[in-house]
Amino acid sequence: MRYVSTRGGVAPQRFSDILLEGLAPDGGLYVPEAYPQADLAAWRGMSYPALACAVLSRFIDDVPALEALVRRTYTRAAFGSDDIVPLKTLEPGLHLLALSNGPTLAFKDLALQLLGNLFEQVLAARKASLNILGATSGDTGSAAEHAMRGKRGIQVFMLSPQGRMSAFQSAQMYALQDANIHNLAVKGTFDDCQDLVKAINADAAFKTRYRIGAVNSINWARVAAQVVYYFWGYFRATASDAQQVAFAVPSGNFGNIHAGYVARSMGLPVERLILATNENDVLDEFFRSGRYRVRRAALATSSPSMDISKASNFERYVFDLVGRDAGQVAHLWRKLERVGEFELQGSAGFVSGRSTHADRLETIRQVHRKYGVMIDPHTADGVKVGLARRVAGVPLICLETALPVKFAATIREALGREPARPAGFEDLEKRPQRFEVIDADADAVKRVIERQAAAR
Ligand SMILES: *Cc1c(COP(=O)(O)O)cnc(C)c1O
Image (cartoon, rainbow, N blue to C red; front, side, top):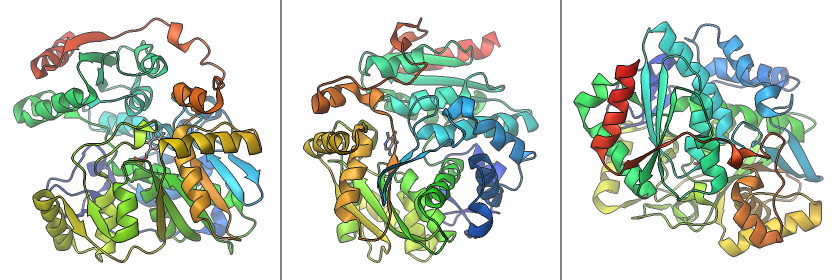
């Protein structure tokens, strides 16, 4: 399997060559040259780790001992059950796919836990090391740290806005005691943190000298890892490969639902992909009207992990929509930079909808009342839009992207009670914390990285 850029300016690459990169050098995203085809009959009866090996080996063909690496990633110890991703049936034909039982209780663990093991192995084979630099408003940072903790050849420097995350979110990062994890609590906002990362990446000499890398949402390995659970959910929710299903996906950067689109392109019988946004409705607008219009800034909502002003993975989908014409993609993105929008018709197999704070509260209440199940605000956006756009006779699988305990304030507002805590998280906020407070100043961040490199 080889990978090409959506902007067409790069020779086809092997998987291990694109693994450690973010954007392609021409500014595009890497996509597989062609979609491999699924073998539904052979895959239906497999365990989650076996299915993950079957799916991932179609995308990754140059990492030695991939199967052992995948089996070491998807374990009961890390994900709480042998199913890894259990399917919970609310009523016949309506299911929740529980993606949030990994170490940080959000679906990003499913991709990042694999990425941590892939990075470690590929770096070791190249006798190389990497300093991962990132900014987080809460969720992605903790999933990345838990994926990279203790990995040989990797140091993580994670910038977070001091005092602006929930106590639970900061404890998920700051309570890590691993020597290769460096939490930098920045005196500023999340935007300040992002600007610092940009400033450091713009310093090419520093970036090369200290081998600065990232674990951003556009990494192809993350999309590939997410393809697996669409197949898994389908097999659990259907009795035969003749049946079709629908998936409802709470969306932000279009990574999760793009994996569903890839699964369908591989032959998974998906009747429709239902995309849900919150008040940040860039993608809902596109799938309703064909108009892709990026926003100046995202609104802060009660489903914060979907608060985006543009969707970083969307270009992969557009590449297919224009018939894999890289020149056309480059043209559209130039237009986007110039006028902030473009129009493109023809999205088949997707429907969308938008959810508000009031909808989230009502959906959390409704699911709790009817089924006795507590869902988090992001999952609620998906359920709300999924129920509105489902079709009779087609099973609906709603992706659960986080556990309610991560968003306790909204659960209290909806239900007037505390969300349940999974085992092992009872004392999280009381554990000793490890972080360094720094000014919102790129030189201060660089000094931390230099000091660390000198100490090794
Ligand atoms: C990241 C995230 C999303 C959005 O997923 P995308 O892949 O960015 O579309 C939704 N819900 C939760 C809880 C998340 O952490």
